[in-house]
Amino acid sequence: MVVGRKKNLAQRVFIIKTAYGLFLEEGYDTVTTKRVAEAAGLAHSLLHYYYPTKSDLLTDVVNTMIAKLHSYLGQQEVDMSDRLYVYGLFNRLFFEVLAVNRKLWGIYQPALTDGTVLRRWTKYSIEKFGLYPPDASEKVKLAPYLLGGSMGQILPLYVDFEVEMELRDTVNLALESFYGMSGVTKAWIYATIGLIDRRMTQPFVRGFLDEFSQMMR
Picture 1: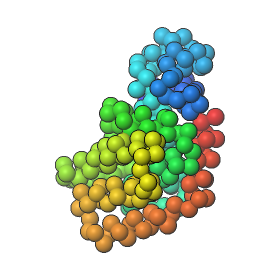
Picture 2: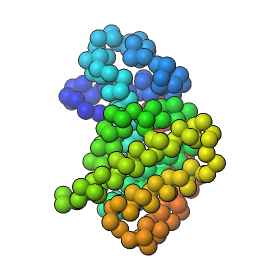
Picture 3: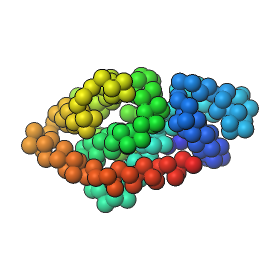
Picture 4: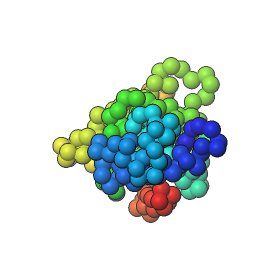
């Protein structure tokens, strides 16, 4: 979730929560690092020490959600050893949460469309979910980056109401492509996406959103 020296962890967490609240209420694009520093009661130079750029700060805000998604799935008796299934479940849950609370789009759409943040976010999620065995091919390793890139292009269409297809169906199409590059059979793909669909109940999605909202207060 948060990188850096152990003694700085509490300060970083406080900054992340402060930035998250501002991004949520005012929008990422309108909030400056100076505004975050003021809200956190810090000198701007000290905030800059922890986060040299706003993209660095956004990266940790996003990675905080990824870490919470990982721990939430583990609490829900999900078989975490089935890494491809879990990675697909993680991505669907992420977008289902955005659909429930559209204010989150103001944070996570910029993250998806900022190439640097998206690359860091994808790398972190790969590591967090232990996605690849050591001998994975380069094609397989590229698949989650293409998945993130495709969703980064698609999500703004939903924000601007330019797409009529359900977000769920769009994410599933992206997952089909991701799984196809991962070397599994079509039968496995359809069966796994069916399992993911059945998991996405309202209590499952709301349960995560409630826990995450509580954690970020």
